[in-house]
Length: 292
Image (cartoon, rainbow, N blue to C red; front, side, top):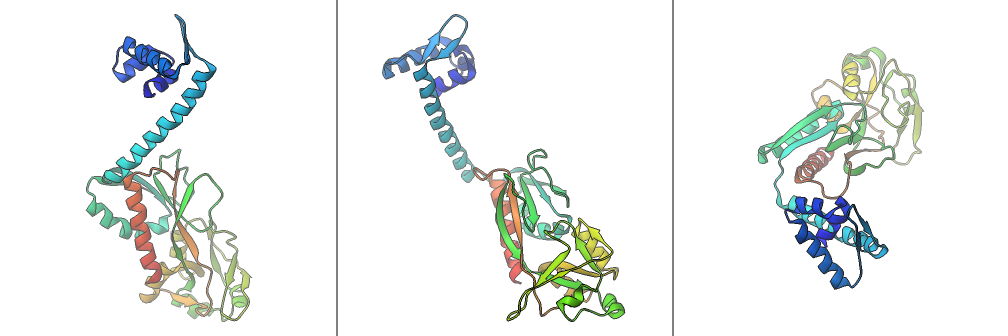
């Protein structure tokens, strides 16, 4: 069956023989034996080319599906057996750098044959064009052919520096937020709006504005730390800076809907071991951080 498939795909018995390290006569004999067993002519032979009969075409399509399925099964078994190794190419937002390092450092120590190629980019990278094995995305996902796996959900907080609070005060209601300078992350879904929730009250959707619009959370954080306004931040990042006294929570009695953190790959099936262990390490670390 496998010989027949390769003869059809390569277009000649001699080409199939070279690939399979057989003689052309041995390949021809296998095809004749197959036709004898099936009782039907599969290939029409001439001195210049081979052509498929109708039955030969149907038989080829069925055989090819079976063969490719068997090969995929073999690859999956190999992936389960093989240890993570080689170069793992990961794209992620710049502001995710600390989380990524904390999550993947133990993985690298455990798998010395694995190396990382990191692409810290706040723009959306073409995974296929740039041969990215794994991309991290935060927030809503555009419809695409990419496969998304939710790693965790992050609650978000509004924060400002003590100096900003001293100079401008802090809002005491969601509506008052609209009178403050809010630094806006443009890659979020509808970034000019913030929706706040509190038990027993209707949701408040506030339109915000400010002097800075950026596609980088890290750039906005640095501007926030210069006392330029209020920023929306992932809880795990904000909590550390609040504990250090560098930021204050804004409207702490109100909450925002959590935002998903996703691992994106170009395909769902047969992920190599290096991708699987990285996704597992990221999920474990992010879930722990989200509940801390």
